[in-house]
Length: 230
Image 1 (cartoon, rainbow, N blue to C red):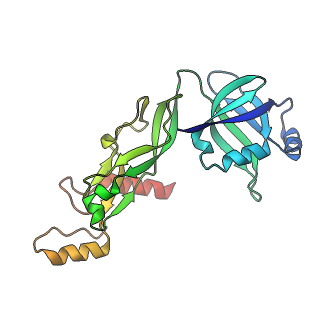
Image 2: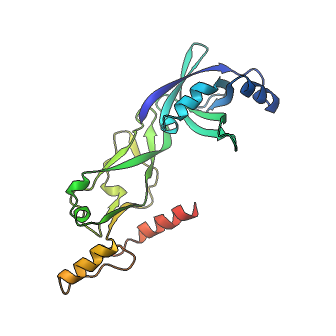
Image 3: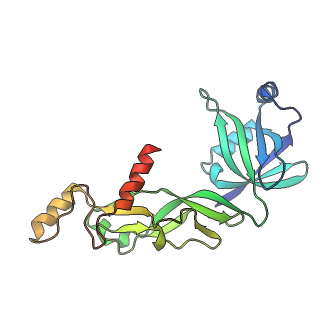
């Protein structure tokens, strides 16, 4: 998980649209802390500090410690409502991280050792089906990213979740299938050069995914279709 952030806050005494508008005029942003089998807490935070933390690019993937009345509450940002014109934050939802609990999060994937992939060296392209993994993690063990090693990968190979070693305390939230994370595909130029170099070599299909012993990767196609519908 990205480094923890700290955000000072004050308790909101009044709720409602009128009270929220008044807070925004004072440079504050209404927010709520919920979850953890406790009652929700309505709060407000300084707009400038919130904007600053949003600007880090990893606010939604960070543990945010809310400092409230001398107490420190560990939370995970779940939603930030922005003004439709100015993009200024208007409301924030924070999920309380209970000690010893687990939470489902989306963690970005990073591919390593691309120089050690024969397929990429030949000009192949890494077609990323999932840029993030849905994981169930222990509250205090949320990884910032998941590294996937592509050493030895050839054109036509696929990378499935079963090949990925997840950190301790994390497991895939999707358990009903061995889903595809990425495939190694061949660009048109590579397909033509391979066809000219040797007779009898298996031609790469028109969809750009080379045939392998495992056959066409129907799961990858399904994942792409799901993402296009989202």
